[in-house]
Length: 388
Image 1: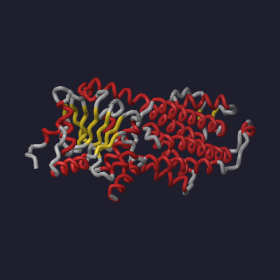
Image 2 (image 1 turned 90 degrees about the vertical axis):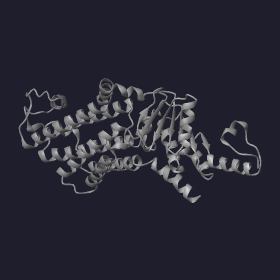
Image 3 (image 1 turned 45 degrees about the vertical axis):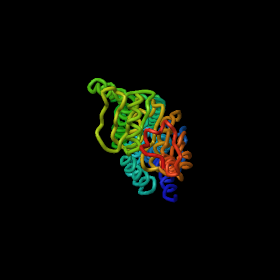
Image 4 (image 1 turned 30 degrees about the vertical axis):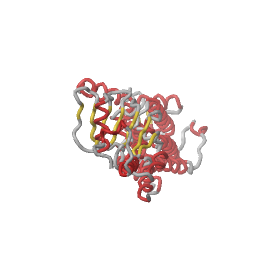
């Protein structure tokens, strides 16, 4: 009983990993950068008319970049909590930039080490952030692009004396930023000092990285889908709707698969091992993989399925399948198999709509047979004996 409770708890914790700790850490890193950036002495924008001394300009530029990057890290951290792929892409990019900014400013502190550790963790768990949403892609892309434009415009204005001709108004700084990050480079305004050239290099690198990330997150999925349809038309067979997803490869799930085939019910069977295949009638599709993974359930069509049968021989895995399925598609029905009576309430807590305990039912029927009782006529074909 304790073992079953532990497995159910483990399944619940697994549903939060790694997006909750990683997203929370990224949010903390962003807040720390915002706080650290605000620790600089405030410089009034009115003092920008004749422009500031070069040292003060670089100081204000450093604080502004930290605040901008910190704010964006908080935003993408919230996206990571939902396992958004676009949030992961921007998180990796922004944490890399944050680390670089802190290294250039020689800040060997938490604002450097925490984003660095999160960058490594985000890369290690990159496959877990596979959820896509068009609205989220647009939100993160617009916010990041706006931040880069703001960073470039104010940075150009602060370092205006380092350009030829000198830049002394925000409109000219905005114009130079757009020309630079779009790689047009008319050449009418040029950096002439070491500091301004270094800033322009950073702006070009950041701008190109942002544009590449936006392209990959918005245009990439659509282009990838079109290429798959062009060069791998057999992938169309993987698309189905209103079907059943059967997870498990034990005796119970194999018998259930045979019954589904007999009754002509379209289903996708997720197995831990075996060979992926589709039968001639296109009613049965086999996918090899771990049904506890969101990517495998998505591939099986959980967004368009009507029912998920979690029939693995581990109650904790069945609970996790129920949680992930409901997380992806809240409207889907989940039938979870309980391998013990103690697991029934825990599977209900895992948001299963129906829980079936075959071992408990089998044990009751077995005792009825031993007691000389008859079983229902519909189940007579599974019993071959003479009355006791």
